[in-house]
Amino acid sequence: QVQLVESGGGAVQAGGSLILSCGASGRTYVMGWFRQAPGKKREFVAGIDRSGGSTNYADSLKGRFTISRDNAKNTVNLRMNSLKPDDTAVYYCAARIGVVVTTVDSSYAYWGQGTQVTVSS
Image (tube, rainbow, N blue to C red; front, side):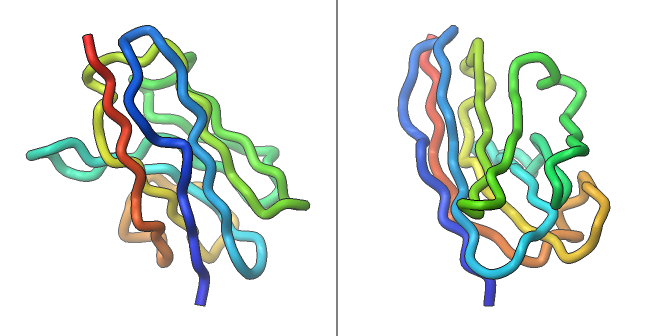
Protein backbone atom coordinates (compact mmCIF):
# COMPACT_ATOMS: atom_id res chain seq x y z
CA GLN A 1 0.00 0.00 0.00
CA VAL A 2 1.36 3.38 -1.02
CA GLN A 3 1.08 6.19 1.47
CA LEU A 4 1.24 9.79 0.36
CA VAL A 5 1.48 12.63 2.85
CA GLU A 6 1.24 16.24 1.77
CA SER A 7 2.54 19.22 3.70
CA GLY A 8 3.20 22.89 3.15
CA GLY A 9 -0.26 24.25 2.65
CA GLY A 10 -1.49 27.34 4.40
CA ALA A 11 -2.74 30.87 4.00
CA VAL A 12 -0.92 33.43 1.90
CA GLN A 13 -1.65 36.80 0.36
CA ALA A 14 -2.03 37.23 -3.37
CA GLY A 15 1.35 37.46 -5.04
CA GLY A 16 2.98 35.24 -2.46
CA SER A 17 4.54 31.81 -2.80
CA LEU A 18 4.16 28.40 -1.23
CA ILE A 19 5.94 25.10 -1.60
CA LEU A 20 3.89 21.94 -1.19
CA SER A 21 5.67 18.70 -0.46
CA CYS A 22 4.51 15.12 -0.84
CA GLY A 23 6.28 12.24 0.83
CA ALA A 24 5.70 8.81 -0.66
CA SER A 25 6.30 5.35 0.69
CA GLY A 26 7.31 2.44 -1.47
CA ARG A 27 8.81 2.53 -4.89
CA THR A 28 9.06 5.41 -7.35
CA TYR A 29 5.89 6.36 -9.20
CA VAL A 30 4.71 8.90 -11.69
CA MET A 31 3.45 11.68 -9.48
CA GLY A 32 0.85 14.35 -9.95
CA TRP A 33 -0.66 17.28 -8.13
CA PHE A 34 -4.37 18.00 -8.43
CA ARG A 35 -6.56 20.57 -6.76
CA GLN A 36 -10.20 21.00 -5.94
CA ALA A 37 -11.81 24.29 -5.15
CA PRO A 38 -15.17 24.50 -3.37
CA GLY A 39 -17.99 23.66 -5.74
CA LYS A 40 -15.64 22.72 -8.57
CA LYS A 41 -14.34 19.51 -10.06
CA ARG A 42 -10.90 18.27 -9.19
CA GLU A 43 -8.40 19.46 -11.77
CA PHE A 44 -4.89 18.55 -12.83
CA VAL A 45 -2.16 20.93 -11.74
CA ALA A 46 1.17 19.30 -12.62
CA GLY A 47 2.82 15.92 -13.05
CA ILE A 48 6.31 14.48 -13.19
CA ASP A 49 7.64 11.18 -14.44
CA ARG A 50 9.67 8.73 -12.39
CA SER A 51 13.05 10.12 -13.35
CA GLY A 52 12.02 13.75 -13.05
CA GLY A 53 12.99 14.33 -16.65
CA SER A 54 9.49 14.92 -17.96
CA THR A 55 6.92 17.27 -16.52
CA ASN A 56 3.47 18.44 -17.52
CA TYR A 57 1.44 21.41 -16.35
CA ALA A 58 -2.06 22.70 -16.67
CA ASP A 59 -1.85 25.36 -19.36
CA SER A 60 -3.22 28.06 -17.08
CA LEU A 61 -0.50 27.42 -14.49
CA LYS A 62 2.58 27.26 -16.68
CA GLY A 63 5.20 29.73 -15.59
CA ARG A 64 3.86 30.08 -12.06
CA PHE A 65 4.00 26.52 -10.75
CA THR A 66 7.01 24.19 -10.81
CA ILE A 67 7.00 20.50 -9.95
CA SER A 68 10.15 18.67 -8.95
CA ARG A 69 11.15 15.48 -7.22
CA ASP A 70 13.93 14.07 -5.10
CA ASN A 71 13.94 10.31 -5.52
CA ALA A 72 16.57 9.84 -2.83
CA LYS A 73 14.10 11.29 -0.35
CA ASN A 74 11.02 9.98 -2.15
CA THR A 75 9.45 13.42 -2.20
CA VAL A 76 7.73 15.53 -4.81
CA ASN A 77 7.46 19.29 -4.45
CA LEU A 78 5.19 21.85 -6.02
CA ARG A 79 6.46 25.39 -5.93
CA MET A 80 3.70 27.92 -6.45
CA ASN A 81 4.58 31.53 -7.24
CA SER A 82 2.50 34.64 -7.83
CA LEU A 83 -0.45 33.04 -6.14
CA LYS A 84 -3.94 34.31 -6.89
CA PRO A 85 -7.20 33.98 -4.99
CA ASP A 86 -8.34 31.58 -7.74
CA ASP A 87 -5.58 29.20 -6.62
CA THR A 88 -7.45 28.63 -3.37
CA ALA A 89 -8.20 24.92 -3.16
CA VAL A 90 -7.35 21.66 -1.49
CA TYR A 91 -4.25 20.33 -3.19
CA TYR A 92 -3.78 16.58 -3.54
CA CYS A 93 -0.71 14.55 -4.30
CA ALA A 94 -1.29 11.44 -6.37
CA ALA A 95 0.75 8.52 -7.66
CA ARG A 96 0.18 6.31 -10.66
CA ILE A 97 1.63 3.04 -11.83
CA GLY A 98 3.02 3.59 -15.27
CA VAL A 99 5.59 5.64 -17.13
CA VAL A 100 3.59 8.48 -18.62
CA VAL A 101 2.38 11.61 -16.88
CA THR A 102 -1.35 11.88 -17.41
CA THR A 103 -3.78 14.64 -16.58
CA VAL A 104 -6.73 12.39 -15.79
CA ASP A 105 -7.29 11.85 -12.10
CA SER A 106 -8.81 8.38 -12.55
CA SER A 107 -5.46 7.14 -13.86
CA TYR A 108 -3.84 7.78 -10.48
CA ALA A 109 -4.28 4.91 -8.05
CA TYR A 110 -3.01 6.47 -4.85
CA TRP A 111 -3.93 9.75 -3.20
CA GLY A 112 -2.88 11.82 -0.25
CA GLN A 113 -5.29 13.38 2.19
CA GLY A 114 -4.92 16.85 0.71
CA THR A 115 -3.60 20.13 2.02
CA GLN A 116 -5.49 23.41 2.04
CA VAL A 117 -4.12 26.44 0.24
CA THR A 118 -5.91 29.72 0.81
CA VAL A 119 -4.92 32.85 -1.08
CA SER A 120 -6.39 36.13 0.07
CA SER A 121 -6.65 39.27 -2.00
